[in-house]
Structures are given as structure tokens and as C-alpha cells.
Length: 292
Image 1: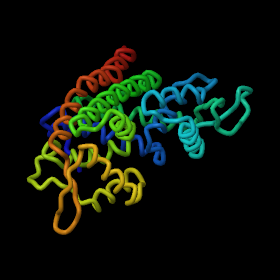
Image 2: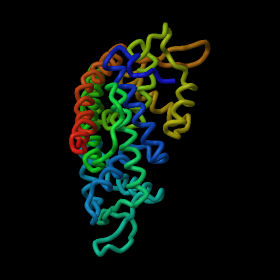
Image 3: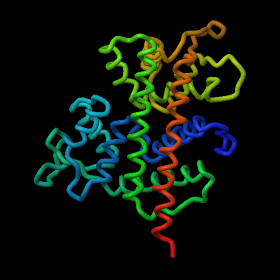
């Protein structure tokens, strides 16, 4: 069971728990859409006008943030369409196959699930600050606030990844390639699993290493990635300076490097003011609007 926010003694652990809780809230409403690009497609469709958002507009954001190519963007739109969250139409508003020139529209299912996700996020933010839950009176404004928070946090995470990669001595080209991977949800989730079990994220006694098989089990629940994909990502995280190889019994294990642990802790602590700003946008401002 996660500790209550009042039991957590530092800003970095508070923010880490909020982020992990948020992704569970997201997956409860969008269970098969567990990639960053899915998140952007859903937010773009929900925030767009009745005419929808163009595939090219979604791609511009994904390319600028994660280096995502147009084919991958189209595949993520298809994933959202497959699960009934978006409709894809052409310029004449006729159904079509997802392509660079298509428009993406939110379905009623997306609107309902997205607003449930917003309300749950508001409740989680209230819990962080010991506040009573607030009603979701302005879902559009809530969407903007949540989107802005995570865009700003993504910048923090990118800076953290770059710091660790430079410490490891990666060449500029290799570093750029590594960061394009590190900013994805899959790598973030694996790193944060190790951080939460390290001396930075918990008070457990050493050793803080985790056996690879346990990472496989935990990440299958969160990412539906097989053991070969997990081993590939763990190997990359070793090469990029985040993990160190260890052995527990006769089993291969990894632990978080001190440099990565400290950098992540600082990044999380620096995110606390952003979370306070999200609290204001989601809770305080909305209560003012509905106050008698």
C-alpha cells in the first residue's frame, strides 16, 4: 500500500508518489494507451474544437517533444481509434483511414473517460495538499492545467536524463539518441521503479538492488512488455549511466547509480512548485467560480 502523503517527509517522494498514482488513474480509464504519444493524442482530441485536430498538428508536438516520426504518430492514433476513443475523418468529414492529412475527433467515450480521469486527478492533487476534494466544474480548464503540468515536468525529466548521460560520458550523438528513448513512459517507469526502491525513494535497509526477474514482473503489469524488451531497456539504462549491475544470490540484478538517484531526487523536488500551481488551477480557481 502506498504511504499517505502526510507520511512522506520530502518533496521528492511526494511528487514521485503523485506521478505514479496519476499514471494508475490514467490506465484505469485508458488501459491499453500506455505510451506518451497516446497521452498526447487523447489530450489533443479532448481539447480540440468540434472540427477535431489534424494529424499533422499532433505530429508536430510529438516530433518536437519526443522525436516521434509521422508513421508512429499515425499508429498511435489508430490505437486510440481501435479502443473507441477517437474518430478519424477527412477534410469532408467522412470516415477515413488514419493518414497525415486526416482529422482526429474525440468520441463520447473519450470525453466521459477523460473527465473521470480529470476528476480523479483533482482528488489526488487535493490529497497531496491535505485539501478536501473539489468538484470538476470546468473540465476544459482542468485539461489545460494537467497538460501544462506534465509538459513542464517532461522538460525537467529531459534535463535530468541529459545530466546523467553527460556524467556517463556519452557522445553528443549517442546522448541525443538516449534521451529520445529516456523521455518515453517505458523508460521513465523502469527508472522510477528503481528510484522508489533506492535509498532516495524509501527508508528500507540495503541492498537496494532489484533482480531483473522482478523488474520483468512489475513492468509487465504496467507496460505489457515481455522479458526480452525489458532486458534490452535495462541494458540501455546501464550503458546510459542510470543503473549499475549487481548480483543477488546467483541472479542478475541492477541498482540505481548515486548520480542518477540524486539527479532524479532534485528533479522531483523541483517539480513540487509545479504541482502547487496545478493545485491552484484545478482546485482553488474552480472553487472561486462556484462559490456563492
